[in-house]
Structure formats: structure tokens, C-alpha cells
Image (cartoon, rainbow, N blue to C red; front, top):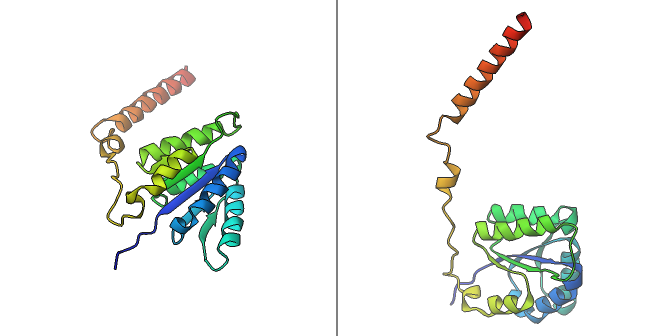
Length: 179
């Protein structure tokens, strides 16, 4: 018997792309059964309804976050950083300026930082889900090592230098007050 894997999948879609995302999920629903989903608010609500309508007998593991512009993008980013998401399907609308564009960029950046599988359109999503690696239980993404970055101040005197500068400044201020 082949071992199965549960992928932790983030699903996000801009308003103009929600229908495309729902169709993609329904088209691939057989392949998506058994996986864990994190979705931003409206997208997740619509996807859940569509999946329950197509597969009423299936229990879907869907966590619905806040709407993207209302904090859902940040919630998704937090889950990426915590290792709770290893695939992010984010159908972006390339023709409409988004008021929360900085959130979208942050999600894109975090996907790269954490080296998770990430796509922003249906064609790429089709290639990802049809890849043999998607269901391969032996496939594990490479977790980048950021030790050099996180320890970049370890052998530097930055704290003691800052303390000395503050002491000198306070001493000068006290001397100026006395005069």
C-alpha cells in the first residue's frame, strides 16, 4: 500500500479570479481530497460551498481566515512562516490595482523566503497539481538555512556600543542642565 501525504494548501484569489479559482478547485477536487486547506475569507467560503455541493459525502478540512484586505493575507503569511502551508495557490488579477498590494507582495516574498510551492495563475497551478511530486510522500521541500542572517549581530558589539552612546549623551545632557 502506498503511503499518502497530506499537503497543506493555501488558496487565495482576487475578486476577478475567484470564479477561475473555484473552477480549478472543482476540476481538481478528486486530487485535492484529503488535503488541508487555508483560505482567505470570501475565497474560502465560496470554495467550501462549491466542494460541498460537488462532494456532499466528503469532509473537507478547510480553515477560513479573514478576508485578504482585512488581515487574511497576513494570517496566510503567518501560517507560511510557521510551516503550516507548503503550497500557495494565489490567483492574482494582473489587470486591477489592489488596495492591499503590499500584502500581496509580502505573501509572494514569504513564499520565496520559506521556499514553498507558489503560483499566481491557473496554468502554473495545473502544472503543479499534475506533477508527480504533488502526491509523492517522499518529496520534502528544502528549508533554507538563514542562520547567517539570524546571527548577523552575534559577534558584534552593537548593544554595548549603543549603551555607551546613550550614557555619553545622558552625561552631556546632565552637564548642560547643571550649567
